[in-house]
Amino acid sequence: MDHKSVLLRKYLYDEGIDPDLRRLIHMVSVAGKYISAQLKAANRKMSGTQNASEEHQLEIDKKADVILQDMITQLDYVAEYASEEQEVVIKTKHPAPKYSVSVDPLDGSSLIDVNLAVGTIVGIHRCEKLIDSGRHIVAALYILYGPLTTLVYTSGKGVHEFVLNPEGEFVLSQTHLQMKPEGKIYSPGGLRTHWTSAHRQYIDDLITTGYKLRYSGGLVPDFNQILMKGGGMFAYPGLINNPEGKLRLLFELYPLAFICEQAGGAATDGVTPILDLKLAEIHQRAPIYIGSTTEVEKAKGYLST
Ligand code: F6P
Image (cartoon, rainbow, N blue to C red; front, top):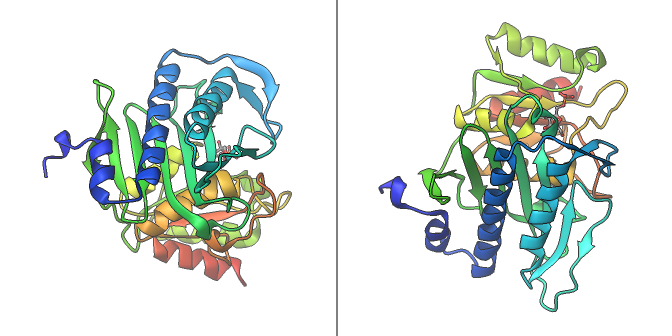
């Protein structure tokens, strides 16, 4: 197949997925193009407000959320929209609900200041199943705004990457991305002085067995690097002063865990697969170890004793 000629629209059509799911993923991709254009406008201004997790918002954080909410909730089969930037779930009251959507509009936006890569993360769940577990996800994707803008998605039929071309189209670049059972890079979040001794021993094990450090402080580029290199491990652990860690289960962890499992990798909080963790409220956090199966199994060995 000549990848250069295959547009996201056509690939989604050929995958034979539900047309409503196809339109939903397409809408998110259009939102991603707008957000990418906004980022290129060098918008680094603070908005003067904070999000639901009391983090300071940039104007672009809020803009990205508005773009995604408008594009997604206009589809008359979307039941719920939950955003990391908002306190509560938006219920659309559309008459024939089919899917609900979680979004982290601009993850890692504190890196915009220093011109590092940031991303949008989206999880698509079966109707009104946002507050349950990750096992109702039917599709997940992220858009990475780096030197290239790329979109990586899965609808449960493998993981595929598209690149935004100068004409403004997402064009296929790689299909059926796979993680090897073992990689050679590690990406560890959280302040070292707040790591537990089990986590510290695990990281020491990776270092002594020759893993290279790769950490930008942006979840999307850090996870993307592991996926594109074909393996390795990203961790944001539970910390001594914060046992649930930092990252949000609904907005960040479920979608990436779904993508990772689809690529032959795994994701755990140290004991339980991320997708099996129960969600009680939308801004709930959890620790994560995600990547190649060997590294994830090794993490469980250290963490569950
Ligand atoms: O959730 C926001 C985020 O910026 C993630 O993108 C990233 O993985 C993490 O926080 C970085 O946190 P820390 O600066 O504590 O390593």
